[in-house]
Length: 303
Image (cartoon, rainbow, N blue to C red; front, top):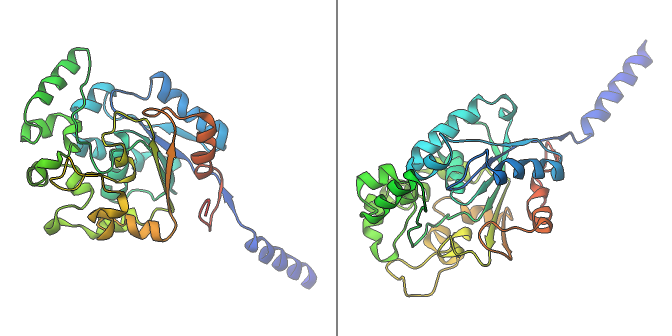
């Protein structure tokens, strides 16, 4: 009996030394003029699951296309925050893949969502993290006509900020004072306002295990495309050379913890050929899949 107990104890001790591999789920947050049920966003999570072996799905916000344009980003974040807290499979933590405007929702989910499950790896595809300097046009359709009418107005009015999602991250370089005073989303997300910087947002962002920032070399939707890496124009300097992420005050003064993550080797600045969100399968396999695959419970991926 004594030998049996010793054997069991040895077996337990041995098992404790073995790394436990877990399959961490992921969510996809789509971009503007899109919805989870469209061809791209219904197939993309399946492709990533097939390649990585990890379960994943697209989370819809409101009614998809029209709300991606007409619902303010703050409300979009509130909706997705409540959804992830109710999804049982995400309770122990999850990874995020986000596309275009969906990245600003993803970052809001990471920074603003109180009592939400932890986010481990975050893969950003063409995210306008530092803003966009030009105003996008919606296109055709009844709700697009409404969006385009809003775009024609002053982008920093309360009405437009409350009714047009992109207005929350349009950053006109020669109107920085107005942007900081009137824009209702990106200045808060990027901790840009000196008197309102929130250490909680920074702490939550720096808790990421990996941050993958994918920029598309021929992107003409995200202007400037360097915004996908947190690069942007100097304040009041639309005609001056772009600042790299590392040259911005957001980085040097570490407003949201980007520098902290980068110094720790947790940020991957990835540049791929192609237009907006046109990612070759081999680049998906190389730059996205490793951060979704099974990971040891006590280790970080892909270091």
